[in-house]
Length: 190
Image 1 (spheres, rainbow, N blue to C red):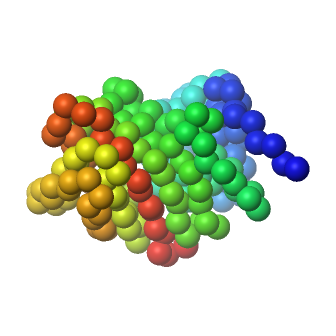
Image 2: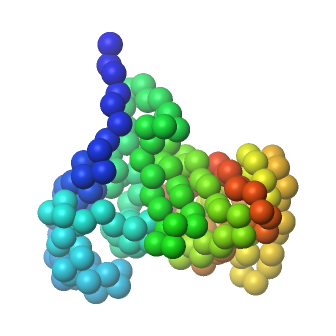
């Protein structure tokens, strides 16, 4: 019987750091070259690789995009059988604490599944993902507006949207209640 135990906060940083180093070295990219490519300081990347820093959600996205890998590859979330329990889940938090994404599962680099929470009145601007990325978002509770290329789409509970994620997009919660979301990120070109 395999019993999963939640990761401690320090373990998350170490896992991300070890995986970052492995992917970077395997791709033959120096720390300095990756730092320049993604716009994150070499010192910050070095601290992450050593497990001495827990990167923000924005930095994790930049790293994954720069290495052209799914975020969950950095987190090593994979097993024959996995259960994603809310109380034990890894939480990726925006720098302003308005948006939280919980990676649930990933399917061999082709897709990732996330649970997301957007605070009342909160907004989260997502940078463009890798070319070929498609996002699917379902509102499980509350409401959501999504802005893509200057167009705004309003979603109610259980509404879903699909769009190309390789351009900047913004999520906003126009209500005074927490918005609970499910995301599927599809990597069509991997």
